[in-house]
Image 1: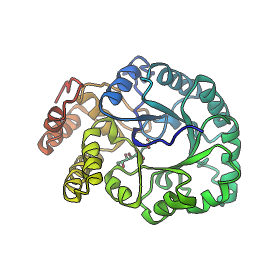
Image 2 (image 1 turned 180 degrees about the vertical axis):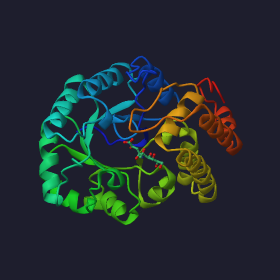
Image 3 (image 1 turned 90 degrees about the horizontal axis):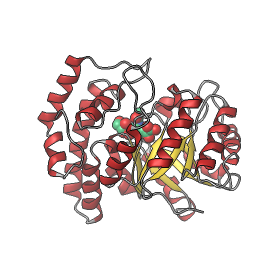
Length: 313
Ligand SMILES: CC(=O)N[C@@H]([C@@H](O)[C@H](O)[C@H](O)CO)[C@@H](O)CC(=O)C(=O)O
């Protein structure tokens, strides 16, 4: 079995052109920028990657491009969740075929599993479609409406999904998180998914995290983790508060569409979002840029030696 995923794993945006089609060449730029910023992996086609708004054909192309162009040290985890189990299995088999590092899936969220047993049976089929790859369950109740105890999930799935590697845990329930981290002496890799409370997860024992803001402010979190590991909680808190301020601005300006606009501001143009998400107007983008500037995001990135052009900052 491959070694555990640790450190920061970004959930990249899927780059698009103004007409809404894929901008595949941009993926190499994203991958190189992530690697240069100290990020260890790319969790592609998830929420941030608008995976469920892409066609299966587009998802295959995006996965192929990431695996083909990511620097070897940047591990590519392909999210294969879909409301059709059959499509998920095809995406999983494809990820294995092209040499992705791992796969992950959320539960189907139109017809939702009624209990943990049904969820585990669903995951078993997808995991079996890529038996040589580590398999992660993607826990994100706010988006999927599937909110079971993840400790129950591990207890039920642990000996039935041979390639179960862990959970991508995007939830605020740090009690469940901690129980998962320590389940069977840390057998599973529980990647934390709420950037705004990363520090809380570190206190609970996290050693890996997946997030959208690691695309543009990874150095904040790297410094946070360094301070935490050195026992300097006061400094770690300051870094977390800075991240919270940036995240608050991003959320106040619309969430994912605002985050995609931020990518252009730091010099990596990932283009528009796909409907039903709505793109920011020029005025909204300018307001967002001003707020980020006032909060010190661009000067922070410059001081941290950002390798991106910070084009519009
Ligand atoms: C909705 C969303 O994008 N959630 C993020 C978080 O990184 C989140 O953006 C962050 O904690 C700010 O709220 C991650 O959990 C994303 C993620 O892993 C994904 O895109 O699949």
